[in-house]
Length: 174
Image (tube, rainbow, N blue to C red; front, top):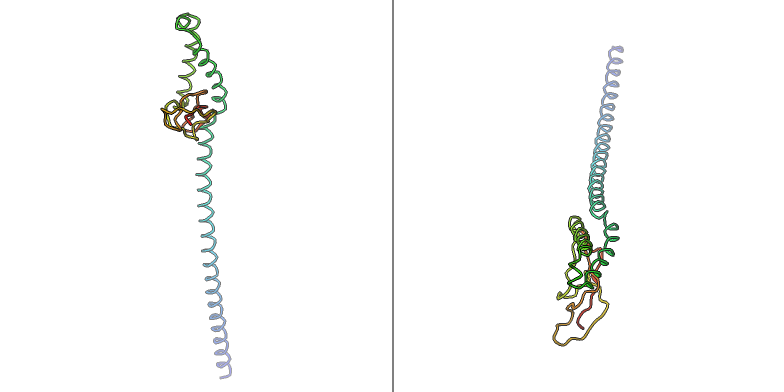
């Protein structure tokens, strides 16, 4: 009987150990589940951050490409201004000369090139002054005109794909 009692004690001891082991395993499993959830949430946040970063960088690169020609075009504008000034001072007879017509053709080719690059002139004369597109160098008093109206354009302004690359220099009514 002592052996039987001893075996029963061993069995009970093993069962207690197994139940403790099961409880330990359940605790460990819960901790693993908790850790897994934390890691998953962290990974999901990191992935969302990365996707947002990719989207922002794609927009940034797109803007860089869109306006990459701005410096080049800004360098061409004084040349275009020189052609416009030369054309202003030419008489009607002089404009009939073959050499002058060739020069004016170059001006037109330059204008066509700028149009293809999505460069547009800023409309000024007769328009209401807009500080986003115009730069005032002089105000004149004219009673028959409404204040803020542009009466003279001293230098043309231009936009590149909707963004001002050079404001128009103008005179307005005071």
